[in-house]
Length: 135
Image 1 (tube, helix red, strand yellow):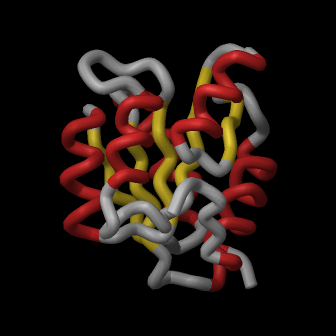
Image 2 (tube, helix red, strand yellow):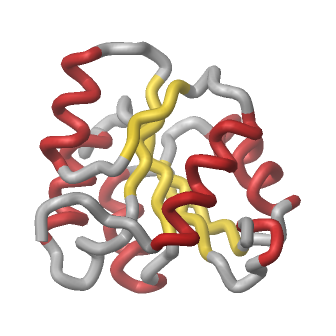
């Protein structure tokens, strides 16, 4: 089963760049997922608590709460800690990957990654409900 076959799936996209809201909304909308967007980490935390999405795609670089700080808040909250978090980044960095995993993210993904690969990664977390972050 993929996200294309689960219209009840909700994907929360947290990114300060409207371009990525549009691109990712179109990508996941084609898979018939419900897509919700937030432009700041603070807004993303509120939306996650209210909606309990199936997966959160979170930008690393944002003003205010960055992706790592936002992920830490999500993973510290009993209501949102089990939601898989995928952190998007424009740069490849071992240090960033380590920080993301320590914050509780399940994956880091380059923004330049193919859409099919990103969909496949999201599908794995949606199918399994996987959260390997701290409990």
